[in-house]
Length: 112
Image 1 (cartoon, rainbow, N blue to C red):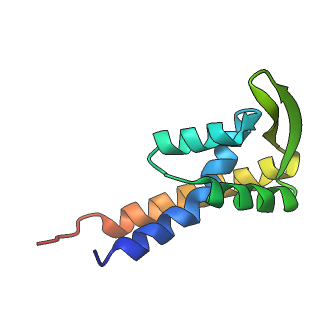
Image 2: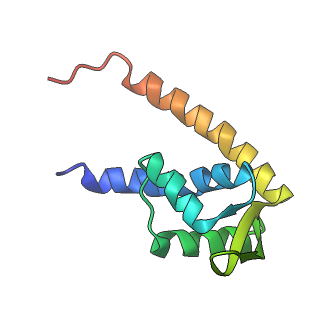
């Protein structure tokens, strides 16, 4: 399919925004992020998620804490930082502007 590459790029472009949004709801374990993304039909695998989480942490937007688990080794739980909340607010505004622009651009088109 010719549109496949564009579709992949569109999804990649919003991963950080979606992940920050999920983490902003409260402390979360990486596999729960993957599950939520899957439920939203934004499939992400560990090989994509962990480097992204590390980059967000390096940027100062996330922090993590190791917690003991009742079913195995300790787990790393992620939470959003104050700086991450500020970035997320900026991304919210950008997303709203993009949705408006796209909807306005495609309104009334004829595809036959």
